[in-house]
Image (cartoon, rainbow over all chains, first blue to last red; front, side, top):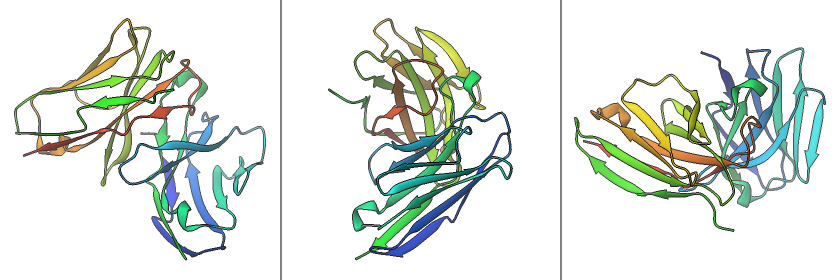
Length: 113
Length: 114
């Protein structure tokens, strides 16, 4: 089965620090790479997404870096805040697969005050 | 604008029973997808419906089925429940099909199988 591998499984960062979560994929047919944020008791919510025609996308404190040759992409959270404490999922999809996402295993982020 | 609504939010069943979960998408959204979330397997795609037709299906046994109605509301059914079916079942809606990533998830239906 197509896989997306995500690391680390858990991450503790001090307030104001940078949180970095990495993902690697196998299927070169993937052409859409979103990140989702999930708080306890809630469903995942789209945070930011990137397509492989760009190497970086920034939205506020959140940045996706994409390395097509290495088949890797990462999420950077700058100036991490306690409110960012959540589980983050990377995902990947193909244009011809509708809305079917292949998710990474998730990273539980805790930002300490 | 109301979000994706899933009912029931929590339910407990016993092995061998069947269960039906309901999902009302965001108004105007025509695509509904279902995902299973477990601590061990993470988030896994079950199936997607668009205009009352199943468009994609994940690697789940035939005990898992679904349907979509003309008003875009969707139901999924799991028959002959097994302990391993205990999970959070998430429904996600999208305005269109084929633009993966822009999914709006509900809060899920948490199923416990005893």
